[in-house]
Image (cartoon, rainbow, N blue to C red; front, side, top):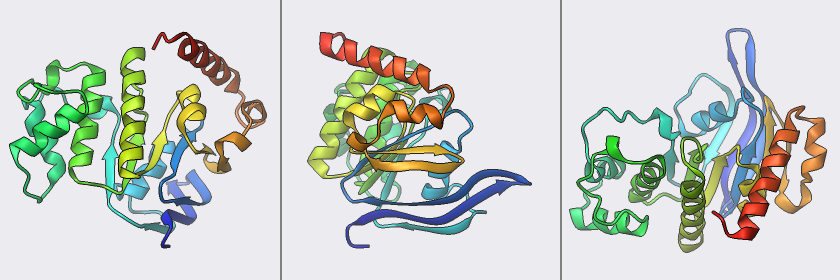
Amino acid sequence: MNNIAILVENLNYKIGEKEILKNINFKIKKGEFVGIIGPNGAGKSTLIKIIVGEIKNYTGQISVNGKIGYLPQVQTINREVPINALQFAKMGAYKKKVSKEQISTLLKNVGLAGKERQLVGTMSGGELQRLSLARALLYNPDILILDEPEAGVDQMGKARFYELLYKVKEKKNLTILMISHDIGMVFEKCTSVMCLNKTLHCHGPTEKIKPDELKILFPDFDLWLRAKNHYEREHENGDI
């Protein structure tokens, strides 16, 4: 396990008689950037909730080598709670003592300098996603797990967030496991790709997985391919 960050063996999960995940096996090496793709209802969010410990009643073995920082979808964050960015980020410290200066430095590093007192409810989707990243990094994790970080964020916000995420990964040598529907970004940034639809259909280096072959597994994959081509055109033109 020395070079393995996450090991999943014979994972199965049901709700009643309905199979959500079936016979899932994979390992993720330290320092990998793994993108999880699959259609809606494929069990992607369930998988990461099992890994982070939110779901317990599964069968199989999960081994995690290191501390996890978890970024849920932006839409799951309650914007009605009257807390500011500093208070929100501080939640990531758990029981560790951190100073206001440490948090302010971290906010500056994610592009939120001077936002300490801004209420979370007034932030854009992109700002809130970067604030969530700051909160996760305050715990000084070895592994970052993200659930659809592009959801609820505009195109410019997505591009900025992904560039920031990649820089953080390189600087801290983090292992990243990320669910995404942004197929262009997955094939652009991730070192490996997992294709999930209740079972694990493929898992390997990004360059060895051909999007055209995935049409066999996912009937709606044409939509993803068009999204990938759109991303690449915009990226080449410098529009994001």
